Length: 316
Image 1 (cartoon, rainbow, N blue to C red):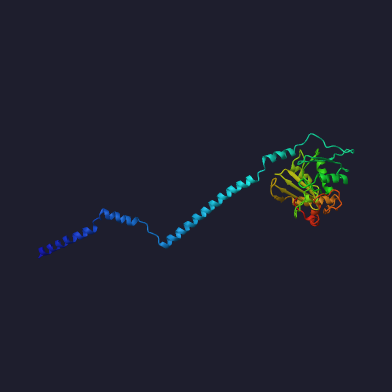
Image 2 (image 1 turned 45 degrees about the horizontal axis):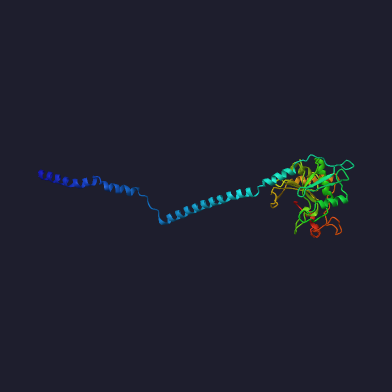
């Protein structure tokens, strides 16, 4: 009986061993590689997530591309602007000759006063005007000579020059002890609704040889009731007579569109206040001349409709 039970136990153990060995036995190399590959293979995102990610990346790419294009467009335009407003070397050299001080002295009147000497840089013509006072004061005949000298060089039109304008220029010449005043532009016949003070015979563009434009402008700003504009690129100073002072700078350059920038507003008001304290009065608006004025030439009718509001002029 014992022998039978022992034989039965041995038989059962032997039958169980193969299945246990199969469970614990390592898998084949091919199976192991396939199993590792399945574990390391990334999961594919869903179609919706993939499409959203693709769109986002596309948007980022297009934004970067647009930024690059914008930057590439901006760089050349900056270079073009710098080149466009560069003053020609020939013009710079010419401006330098305007500022050269000649070896001469201004001629004197019988009373010993220096005469107002004007020289046109365009025509080379010269005129000597005799003042009647130490601060200017020119006779009617001298004013007419000045008007013809300062006529519009393009059209030949003549217009009366405001007497105070010559007084201002004379003060500048005497202050710097200059032998002469170089004139860039005097009267300019107005076109359309032009509001330039040049069209009223009360503005002039000048150079004082041997003196910087900034020094000339700085001195002229102290007169009161004046317009003073400095043109660093063009190389001259604008001076005009007006009821309320106004100062500006224009760096646009010769032949370019005007780009006046107001400056020193508080100084303009202060200059007018000091002029009033000295007993000076603002000049009245400069009206159109009478038809029989001997100094009036072609184009005088262009001033009739402009004279009414000329005291509102700003800039040149």
